[in-house]
Length: 357
Ligand SMILES: O=C(O)CCC(=O)C(=O)O
Ligand SMILES: [Fe+2]
Image (cartoon, protein in one colour):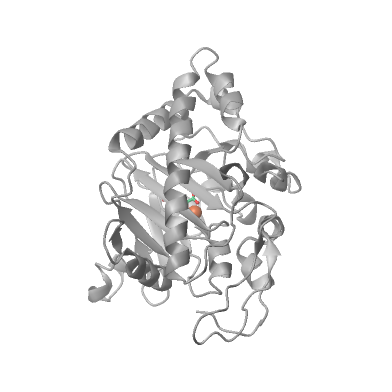
């Protein structure tokens, strides 16, 4: 069985696109981080449609008797929703926040020791999508996959790595458990008989990515995380510290803010679920903007089937007009996405002229 980090080895990234600047020493936004003024930073609260001002993604109680219908409707309309009653304790969320702050607060020289190497997917650095944009993002992150955690933690805390590792391990275990449950609900909502998406929990492609968006002297000229869709089936995101930043794009209103709701986690549809649902669920286009007051942290848990799993559009539903995408393995899709980013989905479309929106 292949492991996810192997799939990224084929796409090495230049050092300069990985190693972040020392954000703690920057007083003004440098040219390298100044996005064009024409770049669209607006969200719907700025536009004329007053009725759209309070538009927000659905909040779904996982214990609601109609949870399946709610999930279907939210995924079909937004590709994104927030969940409550998800079973992840407030205490654990606080610990993840505490440990992440500890990591990003380390002196620059320490963080540089655990920088992602060009052909690796784990470690410290700029977002993985950096090579696709001419400007750098106002973001430093840390990706954890498989066994990378302990090696990295030992480099920065040789005698005190355990606390960080224990919390991140526990979080990943809980996230996997919640993801398995959500996967069942998502498949049920699409009437897909539970396919053998996994043989064991170890085969699944999962990753935990910690994002830190330092307070920025000029947030209107910088981008925290540029627009993208997530690659795998879905992502569970925790936004910490009550700082807004996440936005989702919806045809019509445009960028809609996804404000943190206490106790709720954000779930967004990724590319593989978009393919599996035969484009009935949009892969949510989202981004993160920054603010000038305080650091914002977010924790994204990506969940996907094993690398060799064949992802095929599910066609057994009323009104189906045939497959929108060709079938492919997770490994092949990860490779295409690493090369093409937002052109990855169009490149595997069966009917190039079909309008999916
Ligand atoms: O920070 C956020 O709110 C978004 C993070 C995200 O989209 C990602 O890590 O893929
Ligand atoms: Fe994302």
